Image (tube, rainbow over all chains, first blue to last red; front, side):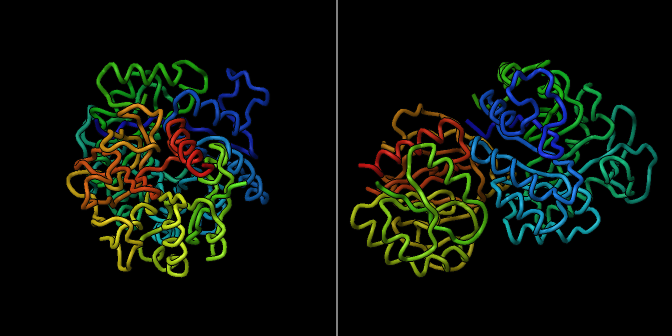
Length: 267
Length: 201
């Protein structure tokens, strides 16, 4: 036996409520992060990610409340990301019971924050989220990958997909790992929301270059997409939202499919 | 009422562990001092932090832990907690508690490190902590170091990640788990329930 590939549902949270995918769940309180976490945990999720998009000066208290609720209810690991900029932000979610924090834009703007977080909480707590987009225009010094579209390099995008940076995603991953990242959450901005498959080439490019686990994200729509990203993409884990939220393919169905194709999955 | 104490090295989150132990039926609190541990019916060394700072924090409670263990009080170490049961670690300087002979070394090879995620445990020597659990059950790991006990007889379960290592060790009332039972779903809860039975006995 060997280490299992992980399936990670992602929940977007705003002001303490899950904002996507609340339609299908017949819950007493639709959109309650604690109830949804429990539901996914019972269905066999290997881990959960909460992306907290709350923009409010009360964010700290709101976040603390549901993170504590989740920690008390489930006993699988979970990560909280969204607007984590420094040790104080990270401490707030980790001391409320989250197992890991993810940092994205703040780390691109000030890479040293990765080391600061890692020194205080340990490398295993720090997930560096990288949003990347294919750039078809060759540029000197970029790590170019041959794809079905021809040669591309992958550009880091910040502010939730709004800002291009000119930074090479593979080079950034290498730097972030040295600074103390424990895992990468790599989201393809080309594939996100399309449901036509993960960016296998992006995932593989990063996974092959770094010695720490890579979680692939963006584009999951079919069970086969998970197989592709675990085999050809060399991902260690795969994250998805809508495919699970709207119950198109329940988690167990995806896991059974993976198992049948020979991917190591936890029962 | 019996009472278990989680020793706090002063880093990170102990809430999940406390909640999982409570769900398993253990009456548990978090302690930081010699006094806290001296009143405990069971002791838990959690799995957050790193070897050298943790050893420093243990300095003031080292004697009480040894005395309680000698009395037969159950001691559970999780992840780093297990590694602290050995004398030394490749992670850093300092002297561990020395309940087990052997060494703690870094995972090596062409592997992603840390070893993060769900992996299986296969039984070696029997241990009541694993009552009711099937061989090859999945549990959750997050670690870069692992222990190599000199005495194979203390190894309860083994796990393979590049190398095959001891994922659980036990000797009388001292139990060490390299994985995190508090993060291992129903299997983890069953292990903690088995621990709860020992605590109340």
